[in-house]
Image (tube, rainbow, N blue to C red; front, top):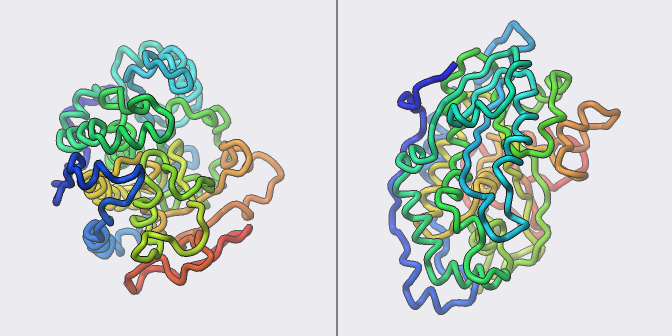
Length: 396
């Protein structure tokens, strides 16, 4: 089934306020990864309003499903953005390789919603798929037109002297390869919005939705035997995570750690020295993201808040950065599963004799990754759980 791209369920851009001029000499003369603008808490205040407004909705989020095979819809997307044309070999991926990887997605016989054009779908063999595929033919140009201000701000950041200085600090001659591909960073950032679009559409009335990257190395392992484990994890928004082990002056996937920790809410003093460990942080991995429509909707609205503000303040990260910030600040929205071995733990563990309870972390509770932090959050909101220390067992 092909749906008209005009029936868009994308969220609207949030107007960016107090946009920072990154070419101001006061900023460009700073050393790479200096925190030139302490992130505002405005996005958090607006997000708390969204959370409060939707608390009752979240409490009644589950949809009754009679057919056990109709519990999960897979959502994914595939666009030829030109990654096969970049010079950097460690980033280059030919589109033919994407097609080969994506075939593994099609071979998984779950209901699917695919964001791609009909030409791309014609390159895939769908003959063995029986559960239903809905194609939403949204060209990348339409997505760019849906977020013109976000795209323009991304271009401004990429072309700023500060961003170039940071890239050179990390060994690039000019810019990192993802900054050279028009639309690439925007597409990475808006993946949660595509998941929300699909979950709002919900043509099969399934209980859960899972966005999986088209090139995810783990996708071939997913099958119906995983549903029992996924039911335990997808009552909230599910993601997998690892522990980022880099020094404080290094980037965290595009966003400086100093800014990153400020958005997360880590306590620091006036000299921008952080309490606790000198390493950062629990880090959401963006290949897998799923949950119920209600949780996905609320998460996406809050995600949009931090996306708008971080761009205005000149901090360009990925969806992984922004989801991690939400994980720390709004833990009630999430269930987290830790990758320890090869990144495919979620799917592999559920088919082996492995105690998965040892790797289910932070079920609706907040992580503490700094030993000396008394409280990551400044607010006594009444609905944040107490800070819990990382333990090798299930929490909650």
